[in-house]
Figure (tube, helix red, strand yellow):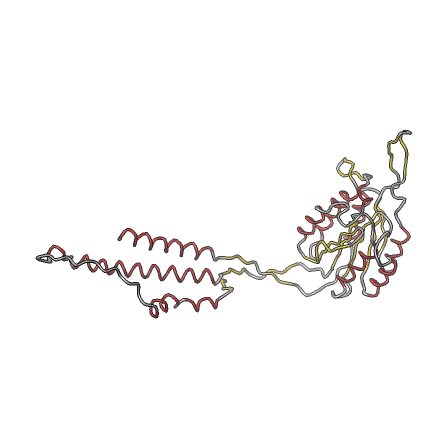
Length: 328
């Protein structure tokens, strides 16, 4: 069906008639009189005169139709389709991704190419987001400071796009795990309990922020927020130096004890991702989270139609102006 967003604009339909009625007509230029002995040569045939009057009426009707279509376009007609049910699981899922400087360590492999931890996270998490049909998903990026990059939304494409556009160091060089959890609690506390989940991914320890991670986890537990923590980073990495190739542990700064305590305090679980395969397996496990049923939500597809009456109105107005110009 077609509806008008601003139907009150139809009250302007009599406006041209009111202007013509209350405003004085434009003054015609006075011409000098011409004296002639007889008027026969200036007499027009009756049929031609009637045609002129009839043609003027047609122009009037065309102008009136153009005005009607112009007002209809301004009233913004919209076509609404049949209601469609949206799949809704009732789960509010927030992702918190670490953007600290240590995330640039290249100890992951994606499609046979050595990449840093953030790129591996972006690739695997993007596939995870795509599978979350029916969930409202949000995105928090944190470093020295956390901030909400995407609020809770059903628009998974936007979440994936903004996650892929995240850059290391964008939120500062340090890691504020506690503040990231606190921000998630603030964003999710007004949502129904039972379907609120935070997935926090980091490769280090809490080195910044005003809230301690355990304290933030206790706040989350009080609000019914379940936290799943993921520690990312390989256990060993071969690097070249002046003394030859050395084997180092690139995840020596990872605070697994705190991440485990955060998950346990909220009824969640701690995962360890040493490579892309383990990271993918973790997200597949997270796919099995229990959903909370809610009332189905409906969506009506809509399409704006104002350009159709607007195009016809401009065409008719141009036609009227062209005919009057030719007659002159």
